[in-house]
Image 1 (tube, rainbow, N blue to C red):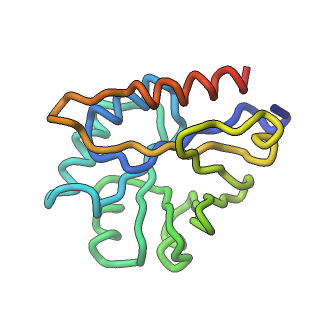
Image 2 (cartoon, rainbow, N blue to C red):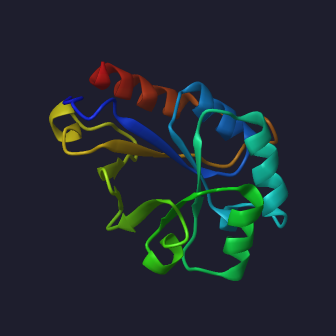
Length: 160
């Protein structure tokens, strides 16, 4: 992999629980994305609780359209990065990640959304970062990370 721009960045989306957030923090992701639509009724409390446990990441708010509720969440949680297909929503954030045809486009380049397998190192050269998705817990505080562990092992093998 061509690391002239620095190491490949990692973004974890669909963060909806502390279990995922702690796992991804241990795996050293750079960005964690909250989607308020995936959170229960009190999204602000959930986001603040997770933020209170995790340091060293940039928090990102995912939204489909600019709404007063999303602006309120952004202000209450001090999130300054946004992820959306809606450029009107993104104009309120200092760090902007545009969703386009299943990829994430940012000022530094394009990010690849991973499904189940990491592409070969030649393909990775075309991207500045990788997007990995979190998911719900099997029960509160319990979740298998076996599939994600395999994915991260593949990423580490290709980026060393």
